[in-house]
Length: 514
Image 1 (cartoon, rainbow, N blue to C red):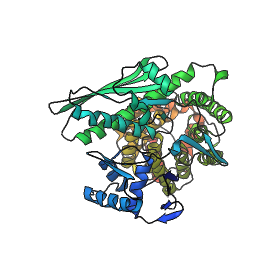
Image 2 (spheres, helix red, strand yellow):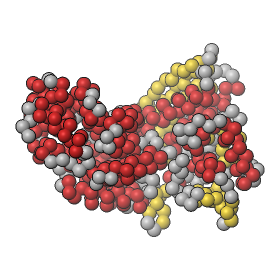
Image 3 (cartoon, helix red, strand yellow):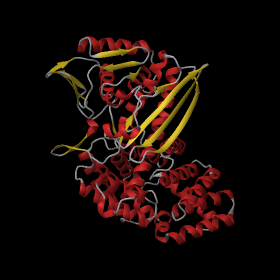
Image 4 (tube, rainbow, N blue to C red):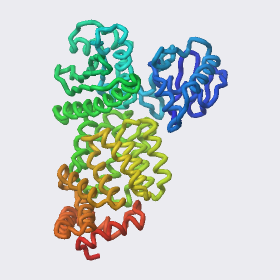
């Protein structure tokens, strides 16, 4: 199990997650490895309830384990810590009796700690209304809101108000704007739960408290065969939807401000907006905004991470940096981001791509897996894993990772890159019809990205659709003859020889004379 790289304290105890040790007032407390992993998960939840299923999944990933194994380790922890520290929440799971300070509330620097950007978006999840007419059903509506708070709090781009603060509004009829003002948040999540005849309906909405407008709303209807499985499913769906909805709202908010009035967070958002457009000019502008964000707040890790990310991909859409210089630039920016925040998943993803470019796919996979461990809902982390698999002879495994990334970010800044990865992986897997479909989708969204036409041409050549293949080939060369020569006339270092030859075979069938 991957645990936090941060040390954590609660009461007189301290968890050293690098040494995997527990101390009480400086004295070592002996606990087993599984017990340490369980305690780490509970500590990261910062006093919130962690479901039994979630504990089993995180402590024994990919392994079927009976619940009594968990109970044995919980009992051992209670003996080691003393009674009262681990609380059983009937029917749900466990929590620590004392909340643990969230290490994500600060950004690490080389000389200490500094607050994260104060203009970061803040969210409050209000207690969900129980519309079932049965007070005994309160546990589900409260538990659902509780789980959403815990899941959203894992996002490094959000400030999430603790349950103890947002739940004071339970049963009170107060305007959302007033609640947001009292809690100091920009966004509010509210919802309701109704259970009847073996089914459950959950209505949820995300509100921009500054304007009072609804940003996003959804309704979930489910059969209630396993109440906790349904709760986990809805929580996952909600958090996957809320994060991109807030991100989109923040982009629009930043775009409304004149460039000269941007703060660090807003400059960062403007950089993301340009990055998602996937043209050479927009890539250059995104880099300018990321540099400005880093200058405005030297302790803000994300702009450095995105500098690494965009430099790593920029040459693919316009030659921002000569390929021979990319490694140095990417590594410098990524290492700076990790100095500021060791768990920045975008920086880890950039290092993963760098390792692939340098011919070290095993190191690339290690960086990608770590990015997923620290940010399982980050599309960029899954994209990093997909790229390693794609260029390591495992295209079908890469497709699974790309699908996971697209589910998390169907319209995010890196969507064009995800679509690119999809059609390359389809091609490597020999599924040329799927390659054509994915490449055409990418072209509809980003018609000026030359690589889409190159792979479309190769796939159409393999399918014998020669007229369309020649047209796509000409378009690829017209858009960027330099990029075509780089990818076709020479073999980029991240391509296996057999994969590069596979691409050339399709292009030759399309009419390329090489």
